[in-house]
Amino acid sequence: MALTIVFIFLGSLMAGFTTDYNSIEPKNLEEETVVQYPSQATSPGHVVFGQYISSDNCGHCSKQGGGSDAHHSIKQNHPDEYVYVTYMSRSFGDTDTAAAGNVAPYNWAWTASGAPDAYFGDRTDQRQSGANAAYTTYDQIFSSGGGMHSSVNDYGMTASISQSGTNYNIDITYKYTGAGNAAGNMKLYAALVDKDCTGYSYSSGIPHGYNCWMAWLTNGNTYKSQNSGSGSSFVSVSPTATSQSVSWTSVPTAVVPGGLSKAIVVGVLMAGNTVSVGGSSPHVYHAIDSTMGPKMDLSIPSFTASTPAGASYVRGDVVTLDATVANTGDLDYNSGGSVDFYYVINGNKNYIGQGTQINTLTTSGAAQTMAAQASFDTSVLPSNGWKTVFGVELSTSGESVTSNNQATTELDHDRPPTSKTPQVIGTSEVSRGQYFTVLAKGDADDNVDTIDTMSFDVEVSKSGMGQWTGAVVTGGDNILYLGSANEGREYSVLPTMDMPAGLYDVRSRTVDARGQTSGWSMATEVFDLMNAPPSIVPNQVSPVQCDISTKVDMTGIISDPETPLSGLSITSSDAAFVGWHPTTTEVEVLFAWSPTQGCPLGQQGIEIFMDDGGDYTTQG
Image (cartoon, rainbow, N blue to C red):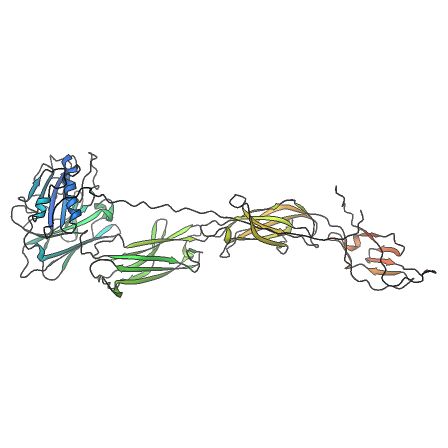
């Protein structure tokens, strides 16, 4: 069918897209048991050492307000004046067992049966058997001095414990601060205890108190527990005005099941040929445990991991790790050590660099804190990780508290996004000059990007040809189907007049905020570009002479997107039309002279009909 062609084109554009979030599991913290009804004991003015005999089946030991609660309540009220160890046996009928602590080189000077029972000052005459239910069983003997030597305040001690790999680092220091000379023939009673007595399996199911003996700390960096260790003697000491220390580095953390959070070190200065001595003479000069002050304590109040992009990284970014180390204890720290940074993969620490040496840190002033920094190239991290844990830890010596010597933080991995198959919205049969909509979809595939930070590249090609172009695509500002599985951005495509008719493929890829791109996702034969009729461009035609047959080239005046000019059929009923010459793409015209009108002058138009063989009816 032949038509005279005039076209006006209109269009619109739209857009959209989305991502998911991962949750982080909360960490549950263990709460410390608190005695509800503390004792009424008053301060004796110095530290007191107690040894408490308990057992698995001892109801008077475990009852509310009974033996175990009474010791613990004194410790709560007087944390720096009471040191005690619980000797926990299986049965009150047999209390001098290896599980309770009766292993060489210790000298068991106490009853072999009966519980609860308690001895103070390492003396058999400072004894309290049985227990009431009022938390006050040991108040009187504690408040009256607990059988300690009168020079107890002429001595000073510290105790600390930390962890290094699978072993503990333990330090006990001692010093004589009085006039004259310290007592002679002195030994260091040193023990490792379990603060909540869960280190052994018991059968009764009742509470088992606090500070249960787990091992003796013995001479020559050795130990002796119920079932392990080679220790054969306690350390002999001679306190002077100069602080001295004894250290252990070979005690496995498994000696106290539960590790550092449950392990307490106890140290006691006592005179005599054995540990313990018993008897009625005062011979305990001082006592300490690792919960008591003054404390040497460093902490990490601030730790951050950052990249130029903020709180996430693209593999290849350099992460900057910054930590602040502070002295939060009561004593200056000058024992050296290091600040070590690390990252975690598959649960394993991987250390970064050589570490930073810890300066002398005072208890106040500018020297109370120090800064440490490290840089890390994320190129070594796995490409499929969702986030990376970074950490910092302190390697120290002599601290009373080490639970605050580590800090961690996480950085999300900004992963390349993924794409989904694009789709055409609305009719898939389109004409040139007619906008149609493509929905581009994808996923951030990380916890960094969101729908507001992602865009898409959209391209079209004649089906199967792979001749991709995005020049005809605009838009991407509007989000469609927010929150649904079909969420995406809306793009507009405007086919140009030079695009051949037929089926077309569409492909899209996702681009995130850092410019990372997904692979292409392609939809094949998703729209059909309809055959367009020929059109006329009203260009100026050169003048022709009157009454002479003239050929006019139609190149640039008549065009068809699918059909070459030579393939068109051009006809006209106008008297001036002579013919169409397809091989030369010329229309031949003759404006004849008339006896009445003469030669036609000025602009003269003729109506022509063009046919490319297409069906432009409604049905076609």
